Length: 288
Length: 81
Image (cartoon, rainbow over all chains, first blue to last red; front, side, top):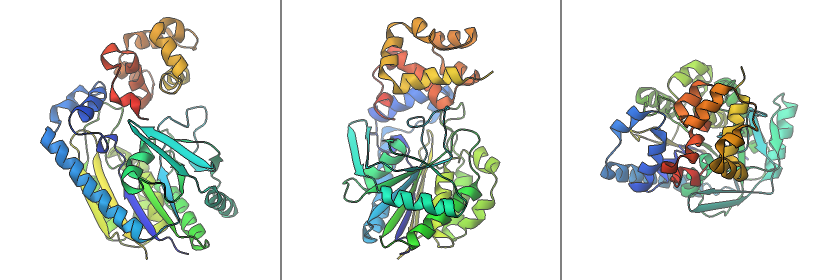
């Protein structure tokens, strides 16, 4: 059965932090890396508006996801030194655990993991010349649970976390990520289950860098326009340098989903820069 | 020179509660268990993430030296990963 829903959404921690004290406490730490970034911090009212706008975007995506009645949600995200370290960095990793858990401040998350789907992706990949890494234990982190808080707050269906190395050089090319997406699309088409997919991360930001606070809104709008036009495959030709100069390394997670949707135009897009770190982006493709 | 050991210490500060507690009690003794250069040890003792990054620490690991800073002891950043 073809994929029933595809989504992409930012996972910036401040989306889920309370505007005001939590948000500012969190950013106070980041400003130690880039003191100048604190100069443009939004007022409490602006923070509250950003939160409401993000909730509105997530609600639209959740509505599309629920309407598609999926049996499982694949979550494509990057690890940020929780499960993987410099002793072993997988370029792509498929989770084969029975269940997956994680915590974000006071919020706890626990989902069944669809390891059978994971194995199908791994086996089909091997047949097609795409060798993915795998393992039986991961800890969920903000790159997954921030979007899941809004999109799948109750663990009604299993998830399948797939990781892309978007942070530690060398990282995969946009074309390779797109190809992995095509592989997932093929596996979904051969399955009897209703499979949905979510990519998280981005858009433009420079975490842990003196450039934190810079947001390349022009480039982000370019990406979203291409996605709305159904020309995501053209982004596979973008160089890594082009993505990295705009702080869009996590867009590689999105490239996987673009490989699953092919030439389908996005049905809905939202964009809101948070003025302190990240251009928040949200996309839904209606596939049924 | 590889900054593996520097990143390893910072990763352990993030993910290994025992190492974090030991470092809180005695940073110098804890870092002595890692194969660090004198410059890396000095930067860790100084507690400046920007300097650690310049020495090869990943930016998002370098921030974890702030877990040892009394002003950031209860920062909400540490309650998420």
